[in-house]
Length: 215
Image (cartoon, rainbow, N blue to C red; front, side):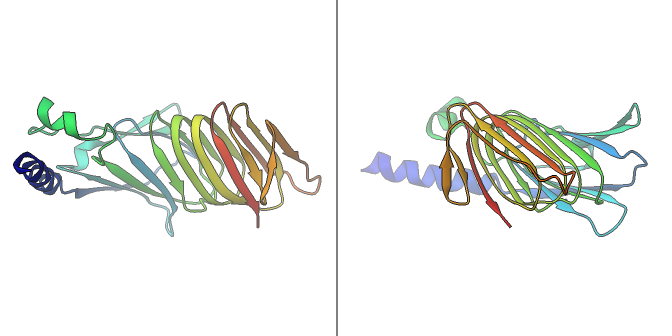
């Protein structure tokens, strides 16, 4: 019983020590194509900006502006993150925590009509109805799309994809997962063509589940 109480206290003190702080970087770019690399993050949120500025918010234990890396390459803007390592992390603590501790999250606000590409491995992504072309390539995670506004190309190995779509040309493929459109299940593939619009939505996954509804 004493060991059990000690473990609860240990977790409480440790999690308090990992309180997140915020770093902000704000800039403009002439590039219409923006690539975002999410290595080091647990969660990533994409929002629409009301101005021409790109705003990057990084939440971590000890973040600063230098941990948000912005580079211009071949008329494209690249955004990366350099996440600080916890100094007090050790083998004993790692033994009792899950692999995906909430260490760092980021939110990016972008002007509409930019072409955005997001790359990552194990990452949860939320697009708050971003109003621009969007490409997402990740290994595993939960992808919440809210309302899909423009062209979308999404490739995920495993995880869950959720969203709402308007009139569009849709192709959804899941080799081993579930496909559910408006409450109806489909096996391996669902396709919908709308000749009156040019918007294209392509979602491809090997083991992931796709849950979509018409707006």
